[in-house]
Length: 310
Image (cartoon, rainbow, N blue to C red; front, side, top):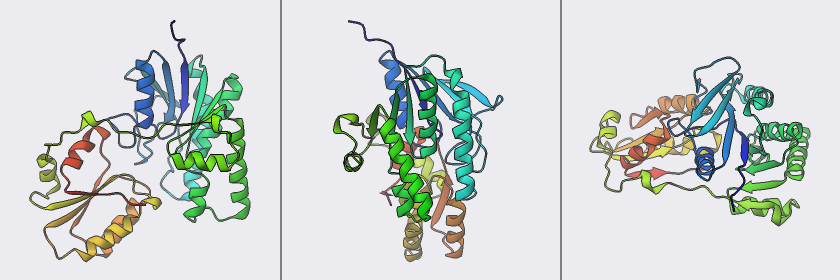
């Protein structure tokens, strides 16, 4: 029996392909669906979520890309992502509006998928699903607003109440909910979401990308750390990543010329972290900026130790 062809529309501001910096969970998911005979369209921002720079050559308010069988519609987003919390919200809201406006260019779809955080794009997906009269699939990749409250970013009791109301609103209206962590499933159950409404799709890794014998000598040379013990952090430079602890550790090890720290990535805290490194007079720390996902295996091969902080 032939499986019916399903067209999925994903609204995701931070979507990236393998030649861009950032996580490629949704690129891999979409590509897998296409190999299974399905159709997948993504509405994404025309700006890089990590760097805030243009992610595509713009062609009006909506630019169209074709990537390994996927159609990617890049919607205009106000370029204020890394200015401040308020301007960050402005950027989110601009994408929320423009992504709904861009949705007709996806053609006929069978399901509309939203992913959170940021939660605003999940609102876009719900609204689009209502306009299209199609099922709304919600993915939770981090707990919002719990994360913002825990980080001290969201303090107003009124805003906290409104945020939790919006969270519950989306849970109730989703036909189904995906999570990437078993802990998030438990959280949703505590919120009263039915167990049969939740599916777990964890993050993964393509082991074929990695060569255990690789040493990353070329990259070590370009970083100027040949022969040194290289400690690498690879990821977003944001509030949650605890990079100041890494810098303080580097300060305590500054007299050991054989140890060097590589901070590989970008994010809204980068300028503050670079200022902190200058204030500490750290010569054993290098900020490389973001690199394409396809280059990450070489960067990890060039490392003697890696850091994951939260």
